[in-house]
Length: 228
Image 1 (spheres, rainbow, N blue to C red):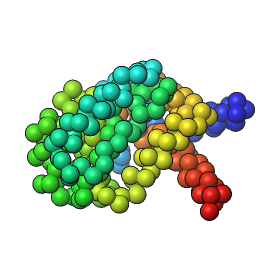
Image 2 (cartoon, rainbow, N blue to C red; image 1 turned 90 degrees about the vertical axis):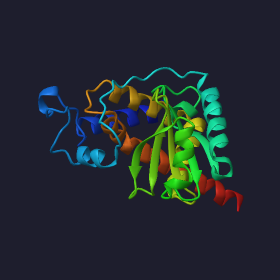
Image 3 (tube, helix red, strand yellow; image 1 turned 180 degrees about the vertical axis):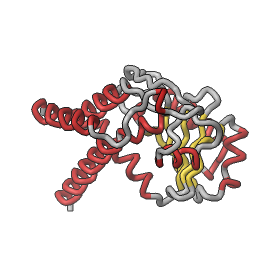
């Protein structure tokens, strides 16, 4: 496993050197601190509600308190939506014991129709969550967060393929030490770079995440084949 991980990390370093989403110096940004001719930046402006933020990317060691923070948020969400909350799952790096992460608890909320905001948005706002992202062309994804910005709630419709992808990634990272270490190293390396905003940082992890999800799906297929 050590040899395999070394090869993966070497590939990661090569990929980062040639990545299309490269970090930018402050002199390259426009007066608002963004790259005006960057297609990804334009996409961000289309879906983000409010101003584009440039927080420092901070990766911290795993905190055993994160699962309890999720449980508290789950109670809050279910109380707000009742039966409208079809599923509430802890996802992202804070859901994986031992994995370093940004100290933000990510939650997957499944509702009947995430495009029908009237069925859940007022209740979530009443519970203290603020709508931050609206992506009609990405499975009607919505993202809410707390005013403290320490909890992100990702909303998808029942049946969205993104639900399975989030859970595949989480479960693979929980179960596979090699992929968990690969992802941890990926985040540490990327967090040291200067990114225009957190969305660029997240996008830079895409290739590694896709590889992990692909391996998770393949492992599940092999497991199902053995059990059939």
